[in-house]
Length: 212
Image (cartoon, rainbow, N blue to C red; front, top):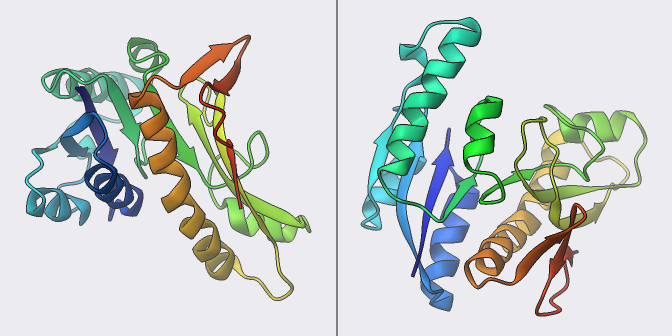
C-alpha cells in the first residue's frame, strides 16, 4: 500500500480530485496527509472531512531570504517524512523549493503546472499564453527538480485558446482537464506504471499521456 502526502496552499481542487479518484477507483494507496503552508487554506477542511490527517507549516513563521527558505523546507521535510510517504504531490503549493528539498524527494514528487511546459514557467501562464497569441494552452504534470517548473514530463493536457478568451475562461477549461489528468498520473505512479528513461517518462501500461 503506497502512502501519498499532498501539499496545498489554498482550496486544493486538484487535491480534491485525487482524493475522490483514489476512493472511487480503489487504488492500492492511501492519502496519508494533506499539508499546507497556510493555516487558512480551504483544502484543509476538505481533507479533514474525509478523515485525512492534516498539518500546517506556516512559511510566515520563518525569516526572509535564503536562510528562511532553507529553514522552512527543513521543517516541511521533517513533517512530511513523519507520514512516511512513497509519493509527495504538489497541488497548488505556492512555494519555491530549495535544491536540498527537491533532491530528498527526487523521482517521488510530482507537480502540476498550468502551461504546456517548457513554455511559460512561473506565474500568470494563461494570461501570457493569450498575450502571445498561442493557439493552444494546457497543463503539465512533471517530476519536480531543483529548476522551477522543469523535470521529466509525465502527462500533458491540451485545450484550444478560443477567440475572446480571457485568463479566467481559459483557466477554467484547463482546470477541468487537470482534474482528470493529475489523478491519472498519481495512479500511474502508485501502480508502478511510470519509468524515466533518458529524462523521458514512459507509461508502461500504454495509457495515453496526453489529455484533451
